[in-house]
Amino acid sequence: MTQSIELRRDPAVQYLLRIADTTLILAQRLGEWCGHAPILEEDIALTNMALDLVGQSRALLTRAGELEGRGHDEDQLAFLRDERDYFNLTLVELPRGDFAFTVLRNLFVAGWARLLWERLCDSGDVEVAAIAGKAVK
Image (cartoon, rainbow, N blue to C red; front, top):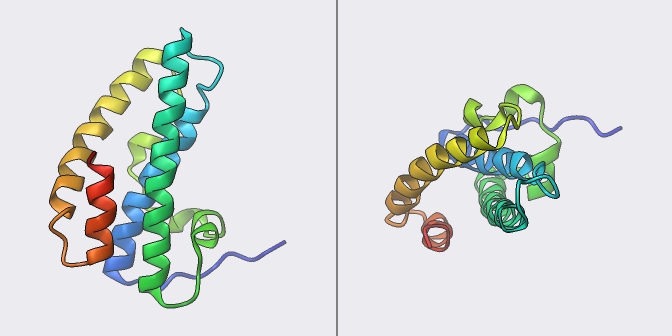
């Protein structure tokens, strides 16, 4: 079994990990609806949203690994950290619940994410600005 990786406690890295972890965990929660949503169109929509969130998370984890400077790739950062080294918003890790809860949680997170991505489009970090520019669409 592979041991957990140890993170460098850099504020810029932790900031990116907070966003990446939030999108990754929400993607996993949305993926739980695959094949279980009330109607087919909602099932497909939730799965597509989950895929978009995974893409955002991958890009952010890759950038966080570059900034950290320890050679950790996106997979190591996503899966080889201790549970206390995940910085996601607590809201996204709550159990799936019913469909109404999922829709409401997505509304809250989407509102937060839109404001975040719009602000990050002006980031001094060119890579983060590019990720935000793609995500805000």
